[in-house]
Amino acid sequence: MRSSPGLRLSLGLCSLLALSCSDMILYRSGEDYFPLVNGSEWKYTCGDDTSYVEVAGDSFVGGRTATVVLVDYSPDYWYREPTQARRFFCRTKNVGGFEDTLEARYGLVYMFPFVEGDSWQETFEDTIIILGTDTISYYHRLKAVVADIEDISVPAGTFGQCYRLDFTEEIHDPDVDTMRYSEWLAPGVGLVKRTTDTREEQLAEYRIGP
Image (cartoon, rainbow, N blue to C red; front, side, top):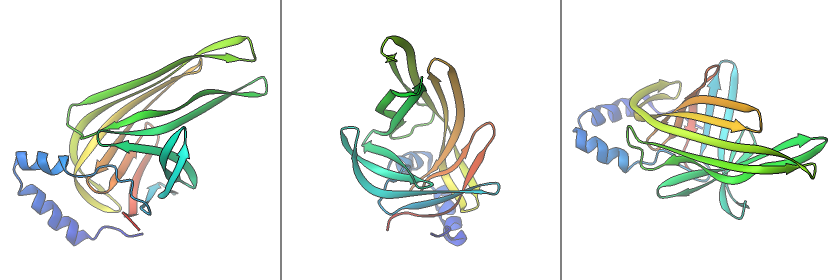
């Protein structure tokens, strides 16, 4: 694991500042804001807590080959296409001592390339039969907007041309749970900061690739 060298970051920011607006657009469109490179690692801090993320190879999950991302040693499964990244959502509900599956699918999280002002959303809806006869209405909606382009300073360094994405996630099972959070993604690095109403995670160290 390593922190980004301050000198290289300073020179990089100076180079970015020298680019024209059209050059900036081309630069951002050519960068990878969500690298899923095997062996990559990220360390995040939140107060006294520390979180570790690692790209750990491939697995066959949900009917397809996916990239395994370990978040504090617990696996998430992702797959990428040129225009999108999807995460495997698997949710169950315990009713009467039995586990019923509410959702098991790859849901849309990111649309590429990021463009300031763009937005997207995807809703999964189903009627679930539980205990053989009873039913519940279930939905999961994730909405995102590319809200801004900012320079972000975190313990790992200062990162220029970061996209800020604002998310709203709603889950109805049948209780409604709404979560709002923001993410800042840096070119060639990925997530450098995430905030919710009660929590802020910041990138402390990272390594892209083996």
